[in-house]
Amino acid sequence: MNRIKEFIEKDVLERFLRYVVIDTTADEESSSCPSTKGQMELARLLEKELKELGLSQVECDSCGYVYGTLTASRGVKSPPITFCAHMDTSPSEPGKDVRPLLHKNYNGGEITFPDDPGLKITLHDSPDLESYKGDTIITASGKTLLGADDKAGIAEIMTALACLSKDKEAKHPELRVVFTPDEEIGRGTGKIDIERLGKYGYTMDGSRAGEIEDECFDAWKTEFVFTGANVHPGFAKGKMLNAAEIAARFISQVPEQETPAHTEKREGFFHLTGFSGEENRARFAFILRDFEEEENRGRIAYLEQLKEAFEVRYPGLGIEMTVTHQYQNMLRILEQHPRVTELAVKAVKNTGLTPLKAAIRGGTDGARLCYKGVPTPNIFAGGHLFHSKKEWIALGAMVKAVETIRELSRLWAEETEV
Image (cartoon, rainbow, N blue to C red; front, side, top):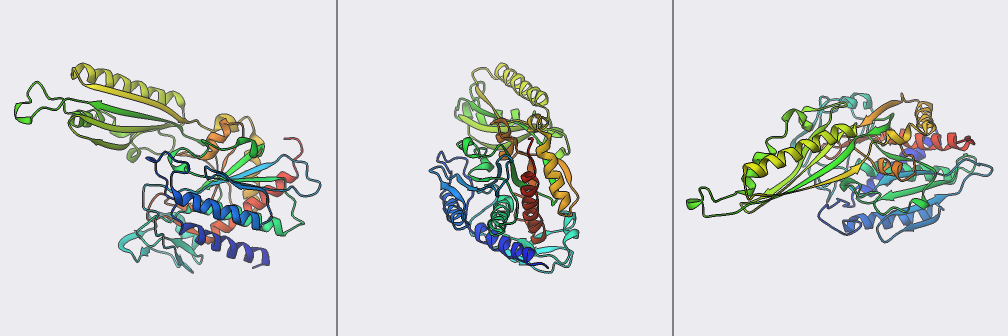
């Protein structure tokens, strides 16, 4: 192993283990920015580390966004490039008291968890495990998620910056990094200072090693409030409008075959994200996802028709429906700037990996950045089974992500006509 690879392996692991123990779980019910204090704790740490690496214009602003700039190599005239990763973790599983475990020299087969003996990662869950025999696999202990989404991306960007700041011979354009809060609850670019970013960008927020994603879902959210009328159940005939009961009936009308458990590849879906209620009032929401906006508009039309039918069926029932367009398919922008993705594919290939072009069945900060004027595809960070207690990442994948950032920076340094 050469000295650079040894440095990368040691540095990216140390950073990753340092970051994941900070609880940065996002909170959708919070109106603050960032939504939780732990995100600001990590932001302050990253601000300090960027300054130690010698970057300029380093700042953690009042909303928890962290910025920094690495000056371009002497003579490089190509445009400034941004690398981005998010600091928060999903509220789907606990993110407090993460205890990362190193499964060194992984020899294949199942991985078990000391804090939950019944929990296992199998090759059925993750066939990619087979590719990492002999590597170090990192998991949590079974009580929490790990946080590789997206603290792996942060660690990889930081280690790449450490390499580039030390290696004065390495050519690179001006690099403007940004670490964002609350991506997991859809607020990652809500208060970003777009003027501080480069002309083009890359999020390090993908999964499988080698993946480059230039397409994502078109995304909508529909929120419902049902207002009923409660009456003593012994005297309720013809009088009661049980909001929770009627809402449950409404939800049951969504086609089961168009839900996440029954869809894959380019198939879209309705996804119920929450339900609460009683006789007088019920609240619930769906997120709608598809690669084509027209298909989602059809789903919205279906829900609107269902709403009208229930208002007729239950006179006096109040139904409020709010529709929000959350983000758009980034392919519409990236296909106008093909060189951005082409260089990512070339960088991945030059590190010895097979480039895997894919469409994200989800979204990233890059999707919104594309529509804010910064074309931003997504590159792998290396983790698997995100948002779950089975989340894992291989150290070798993290090393490859760092190498990809360095190689992509070198390729951009050679560009002049973009």
